[in-house]
Length: 303
Image (cartoon, rainbow, N blue to C red; front, side, top):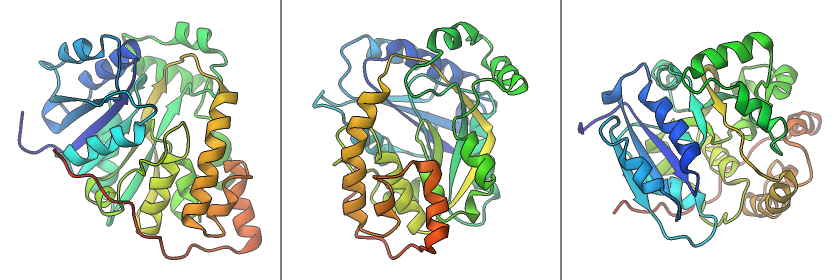
């Protein structure tokens, strides 16, 4: 294990060993090489063979494993554990079951290297669905031995594109020109400055159910001056898995209300009642602007 790395890849997981396997396999294929990055797998109390699976990659990746007891949905705390222990100046967040293109980490690092200040990078995610629609067909269509070929094929066929394409077509790909670019910062494949993440307080651990913990930290990064960037070449595939859109929206609704009350800005109050893709239009119609950020949440200390 080297003392310094270019980036730290933080992967929270919970009872998803087979999905995690696909993610770790994709990390072994990265063009930047093993010495350029570390992988921090943070296990939110899994009861399957996640620990054994991770151990099988310790000779192929600069990898560390952290376990926290199962006390409910604590993905925010899991990501904070990764940030607190990260050795890289850039933190890349990848969810279990996200298969990175072999050039994805290189693209994230290039974006940060080219920037003249702190940025938050949104990678591209093929095959993401809200209720596992087309799940079986997607699973059969992925070439797990050659995900680069699958990504190339999906792109050429315009098939299972990132669901944020509607947003990009409406507003363009220059996220820095938007008032609320943070709405597209979904942590299945994104990156940010490790130092700035720590400065803004990292993820808010009050989020204890699905939804909004990512846009919360993104909003604070935005208010702290981070410029948001879309990198299509930081591409990936989101492996299908069982989930309920209705259940997710039910838990997210309370989180959106918490988000609005916490920041208490006119823009934050748009989040609970409106679709994310419509908020930029409303901001423009009303001429809204951001105000100074609230006091950040307390950042955990690495142990």
